Amino acid sequence: MAGAKAVSESGVDPAAIGVMINTSVSRRYLEPSTAVAVHHALGLPRQTAMMAKAVQRYGMVVTEALARGLPVVAAEVGGLAGALGQCADGARPGMLVPPEDPTALSAALRAWLSDGELRGRLRRVARERRESLPGWSTTASAVAAALVAVSG
Image (cartoon, rainbow, N blue to C red; front, side, top):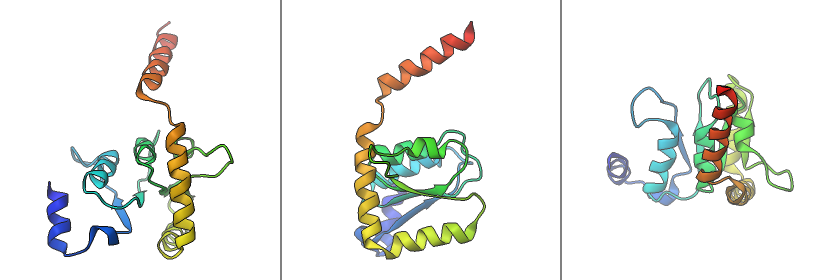
């Protein structure tokens, strides 16, 4: 895998990698949700799946990150807030910033990288949120019902 080769050749200990950034969805296998799977396959520590994309209608990358217990830092666009959701106590498993606001994104990333208590709390909440995600059979049933409803 190219990612494993890149990490190996970098000389950086995978445990020291604090943020994985993927901003491309223009080529096959560069879909952000694939980046989350790559993160998992490389055995990187549970860190942040970070998305810097102007439009995301649903937020599959958020769901993929949460399915692996990864907190999310993202712009609040499209369906990302709904996909991120919250736990029973109202805690969010990540941080949402205003779209097209590099200052807010920078502040969120700075907080993530410098505040160990924040990272720990967001990781805990992401693991809790993972447990409340619907399974594929539930999702498939909901999609099928929606398709039946709109087909008349």
